[in-house]
Length: 472
Image (cartoon, rainbow, N blue to C red; front, side, top):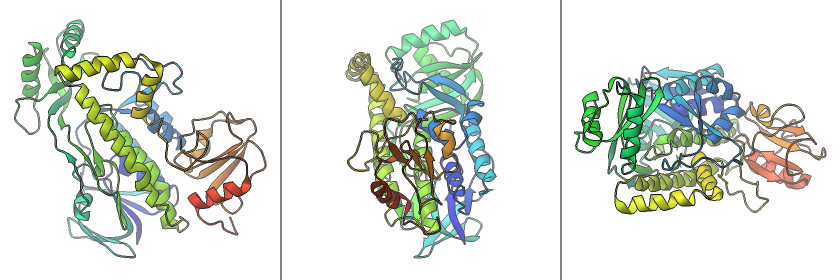
């Protein structure tokens, strides 16, 4: 029997596969596409995603393949620079196929099996596992099944989980292509039109090539063609800027939906299978990847047999409210992009408020997930929050999290993880740049305990990492 089958080898599925493999879980990833989709869309990896990739030793590989971008201006495209005190100052623009390929290679390198051209046709679960039937009739048996198979998730539909929300009201065309008009002319025209229509954009991605975003109003449905872009540009700008040679073209709507449940028995949902929303703010890929970092170690713990009874339930408890908040902020951003007088007035007011550093930082923190706080009960301000990549006596904190284990960072030199050493590392470092005597850090980088009392630490270790063992 396979330990876990993952449907979908996009960023969420590949990240989850790697996280499971760090704990020795046998993983099979089923991807229905035989080849990567021909869509070289540039995506933004946000601060929290970059931090979590750094925890697994992947950051440098991503930085080599992307371009760093300023953090400011990501909320509704309001051009306000990030406050100087923001502790992480960039996003990473990178082609989505590059991200998918790197994460898939990482998962395979850790021992995951990936099969392309394999679509799930059905499944049945019982007390001991899940029987998965493929489109070609093959049957597979696994302890758990995770649907990371996108907005039209087959797993979610077969599971019968509701997906309530709002259908798409407006559609937008987006693509990357060359243009013959001088950049100065394009820049001036774009600035003029965006005074009234924030859904219009021609932004340079490299010399002579542009990211083009235009409302799809009046166009027939279906996959867009270059002439659709020309028609909309002429209608809005009076010229098509001589666009030609597209690399990719796409159409997206503003549908917003959230799964009723993230887990039914031995079947779970993650990424776009659990939530969809407009791409405003570039949060979709990041939200899914962070689902995977939250779920991976918990599912592995369940499979390996040491998880506390309620640990796997915390996946939905923690991540579904995060998705609900993302859906709300994308709804707000879409309203602010309207050309109507009322939303334009609200946008101007918000732009003024964002000149206040605390307001600006709060919105940046919301989009990039650095202000996320899980509810771990009463405690100091850092409890439930991410721990930044601290300076240590030797190296950096995130270098100590590559194995996906828990970590006690102890400045007192008096604490122990005896009984949990097979799951949790102990790092005694009195010089650590930490404003606390000691912290317990979960594998996903969130602080689960702060203090210096061994008995309190033991209680938290048991909550998150199960019963102590005599041999650990």
